[in-house]
Length: 125
Image 1: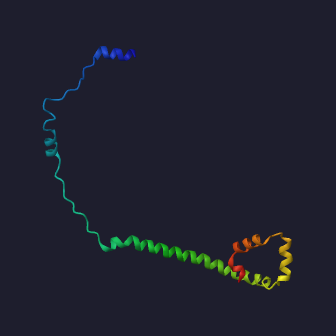
Image 2: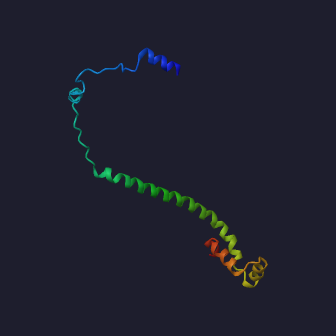
Image 3: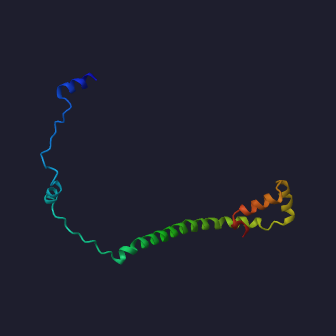
């Protein structure tokens, strides 16, 4: 606070910056005269290919994604083909053997239904 009072005593509250008389009267006109002329740039013509290109790229991306997924799923099916022969031995079990097994698991009909509906469909083939 003491420094502020010393500065006020030394320099006062008068604004040291001044502007010449009439400086802002024609300021806009003088500024516009000093600016370079603006070049008129015409908008480029949009060709049909430029409009279609994003859609073609997106379609190509989805086709590539589809083939990639098919490649991985196809490999899994080939790997699972060997395991399906092992499970075929169990599909011929008669109901008279299955009923005691289900009773031992203590599942009621609803839980058994849930289990069978949540299971993969390829085990029923």
